[in-house]
Image (tube, rainbow, N blue to C red; front, side):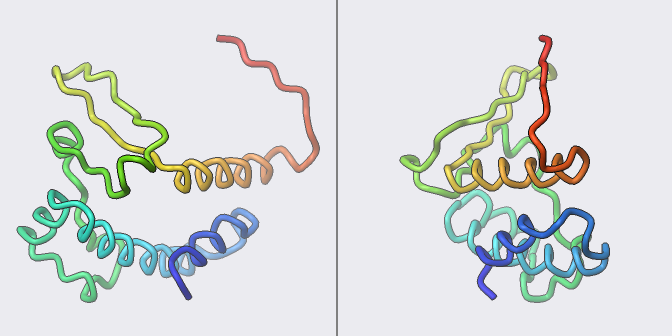
Length: 136
């Protein structure tokens, strides 16, 4: 199954409908494909995985995937889509230093985030529309 379909399947499933082991197996397929894809699109990520000698096909569990150091989000542009596809750039408050961490969001990712949040909230609140008040 193609990665896009795996992601859609995971988002569209009722929340908490699969076991943790099943979820980890599905997420591992998605993450391995995304690491391979983003390494080809961003030289900084490719360099990091290369220096760490990450063997993508050899990854057997999610815990084997190395974290991306926070400093990389501060010092490098880690965008993996074209600049024209970026609809929003999230920045940290940079309270511990002068450089904020930056994460670029494209339209596909924004849509997935919205669908996932809707799915999670509807599992708690139900599918009926409810009154909602936000006080800031």
